Image 1: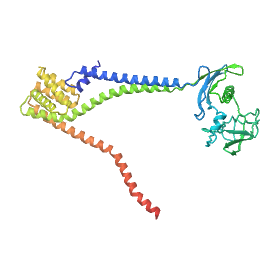
Image 2: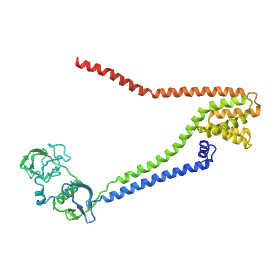
Image 3: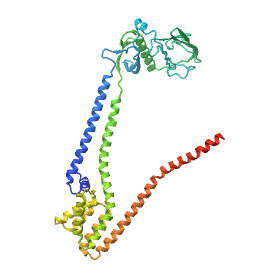
Image 4: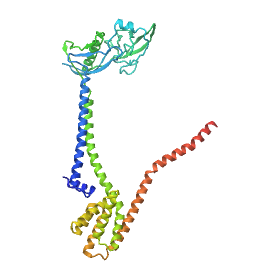
Length: 431
């Protein structure tokens, strides 16, 4: 056992076995840490199971389409071949309605159009790579068709098809055709296409994206999308990139366990601090009682026993526990067990750990060697000094409390100034 902490428990729980309190505290600490660890492990396990259930790519290389009006969804795929591995977001379009289903929904009318034309380009006047053109209306069986003023430059899917583009760029326009009931709107979007410099990796990535786009557009009425197994005669393997949310939780879990352990230890030392503050507050009252009893003719030993007995009586009547008097009771028991007075006084000062108590124990121990001629005078001086220190601490606490109230008082002053100035400002505006 840690001797320092064992001594601390003997101070916090005088009259009780410190080994038992020490063991009870650490058993409680272990239970709390084990419970927190088990809960954290269960959370990680649940998230792992949840993430495993979110996998959308089957072992056969297929992705399930959602039914109409359930929305599209996106998976992060990693396409690998001899050229390397690429991470590509892949959006799966919802299943296309059959003609019979469209007939059932033809009277439904609602139109929403969301379009992000630029797709990362700088502006409509500076287009360097493919545009993203919406092909349907979310929530309704209507579609948007796109036409290009020059399909040799950019096609109706927003793909740049021109093989050679001059440095000064090419002017072209796209015409989105929005059909709602019997009304048709045609808009013109002028564009200026500039050449794009691409590395081998970018070319490979672009080919993969185009291949996935063609795969998605094929067989829209099917419920599954089968990913291509090869590109340009080379085999491709696919795997879905899983989110790493579970692994992000583990560091926070470990940090929480560490902070919980420190918090439990901090509570223990907070109790020790409160004990020391209580002893300092109680000391002037105790030394005054001691001076009064010794002045009435009692020996210091009998005065300790008398004060301890009086404290135990008050405790049985429902009085508050006071650490200083608990130490006095222990000193009284030591006297009754026949321990030498000098050892008892020194043990009393050492257990209280306060400067005032150590000073008192020195005075009482010195009295045994030098006689009690000056004991009453020394106790009177000690009482006056203790009361003076208590007044100083009370004044200091009052000053600290006043400092803490300074900010709320400043806020109240600002509120009062605002309430005074508000009517004046209103009258000034109306005037």
